[in-house]
Amino acid sequence: MTEARAGNYAAVKSIIGDVMANSPSVEDLAMELLDEHKSKPAILAAIEAGGLADNGTRDLLALGLFEAAAEGHIEIVELLADHGANMDRPHGSDGTTAMGIAAFTGRNDIVQFLTRRAANLNAKDNKGVTPFMLAVAKCSAETVSKMIGVGADLHSESNGGLTVKDFASMPPKADILALLDSAPESGINTATREPGLTAPAAKGGVCVAKYKVGKYVMKVFTDIRSFGPVKFLYILEVSFAEKASPIMYVTCESSDLSPSHELIMGVFDSNGHQNLGPVEGIGKLQMFIARARLEAGKRIIDS
Image (cartoon, rainbow, N blue to C red):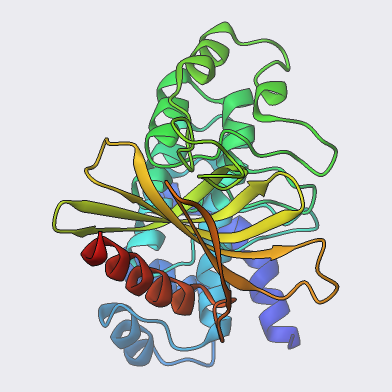
């Protein structure tokens, strides 16, 4: 990092601290945050185009958003998010994000705004703590409910083994604990199947994609908790309708019993578990989605 840029980084917090009193335009704010060597027309053109000129610029705007979240300046968070700042960039020695620091300081307005803007609720910092864990400890039941509604992982654990409910119990928050107890089971639905035979022996997971194919719904899950020797990297869950029980799962899996731990594609349905063997490239999410959707589609047509 150059000396000039280091100075810019060091100045960001004081700039954000003064910004509410000065109420500059977004262009003036951007000018304060960006490198001095950049021309104003070039900066404005980049902002108006919805993009940013280089990684240093992105880093500065992301740092500005983080500091604004830490100081509780919702207006500045909104401005910088609207103009391309990375909401999920980790900061500091603990690697927390803007949503993480807002949750830690109990800023319900900022957490709810970042939730609406699809910031990552489940991003783990260097201690394995997510913004959602901090929110159940520090924020309101309304905020926690909104986060649950858009996919917060209720099953996360920190590096030290603390669960979401543990965070809601420091000190105990009866309304949050009741909300967690009443929340529908998130992640993969195996309730009507026999895990290990007609369904993966897995729970939880984060839904990263959903597709509707005629009357069928396909959901893709990552960050899955596997039980037993078979480990699931990705799972495609297929249901006949949005709220119906799953009829099929296509998986990217490996086995602890295999010396190579090779990734293979598998299928669970009413006939049990079928090993389809290794498939090139399925360790990459987009390749898995393409191959799994194709496999599920063929089986639906043949059924």
